[in-house]
Length: 457
Image: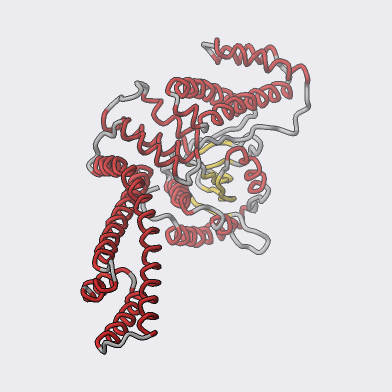
């Protein structure tokens, strides 16, 4: 699981950082000991001269610049005293040595302050390092990570420049990791385990239809019907009664799109809550949010499917046979798909290739193809946030109109852009376009294989 490996990498980097600080502290303490030895050997000028070899050895490991200056002054002082001739030069040499020792004392005091700070920091990090190493080991050997240890991860993420949503995503992956290893640890519902991740990555198609005539009476019905959804047992019967209550085609479409919009807004409110760390970390609140989300999501799917039926969007079964692909082109006869791919993050590219390959081979799953409510002549291939707009010309011939990545509620803009491109309609051109399509598809494969993200997502 890539997210768990990312957490492991963050922990390993932190362990390296703490270890480096420990090593730096040890180096500082060694330097402090050298200072102490140096000062003990040079309490007076005479002691300095008697212990000059030891003083200079220690000093060379402390400060090379001062070492060379000190060595020069000591040599001058010894030369003068050997001649038994104390002069003004002797006094100057002693004064210079005192100044050098004064500089050393300043450096020594700074060093002690730094050691004090590092000691506190290393001491505070000692338990963290031990527990980080425990977590790294447990991830390596696929062992359960106790919530006590997860708290260390949470605190570490808090201290990093990582946004709240990413932190919540990491913590949710840890929950899933623990569930897989240790069974139903925190919760009992199998559906729960991916709910938060679904919410963090949630996006849906915009069903707003500007062509519908506004009806205030229909708008008023939304609140009433929304309030009774919770009590519906048989939605098939509910929709039958709804068509009797709202027989006008414009009004029923308006009702359905407004109700879907209302449910989407409620879902967005819940998503905003789950992205709040205060709510996410509260076990009871998080469970309530997820329960509400799952209920609203089931309503959204029910109304969405009914809306598709009302708009008469027919989704034909995917043919279980090889099909031919042709591609929409711009006015310069360049395939749109090759332009579109350059605007798609490399993490999605392999999904694009898989969808096109499955479509061509007749192995596409029905869940990966859907209709477009506002653009009824087109369909979409879908996987995660990837959307490929296609036009089915015959049971074995599809035109690839364009591809994009849907970002939250901006899907409708993407569809409007792609569906405005059109597609070839002259049947006499199809044989030539099919041969060209094979070459274009090879170019698509080459681009994706060269640019797709390496490794698992």
